[in-house]
Image 1 (spheres, rainbow, N blue to C red):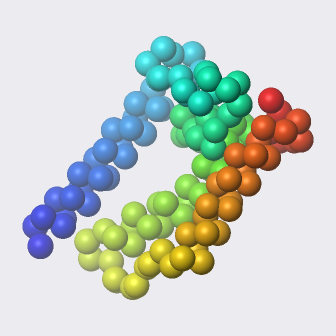
Image 2 (spheres, rainbow, N blue to C red):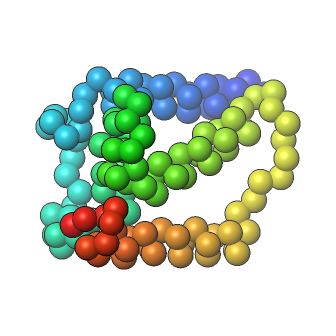
Length: 126
């Protein structure tokens, strides 16, 4: 029982620390953040490119700018937060499973976003 609560508390502390760091240090201006290896090698953006900058803007209340930097992260962030609350101690435990169909939907979504964001179409300028 204690182990589960400790693990959840550790996850929330990690997210709080990362959120504080992202709030205080702008990834667009700082050198504290590593560059994307896929972008450096190919010149194309991966699905995660812009995530830190997007989360920084989101933490400062700039939803439109955050969405322009990485729409996938901004769209899926509420799902991640709901899942974290779902697995918190004291929450009602309902079956949450990644079925093969849900897994394929997620793969198609991420790969489709990856391809589409490297086209000259809005809101994904290269």
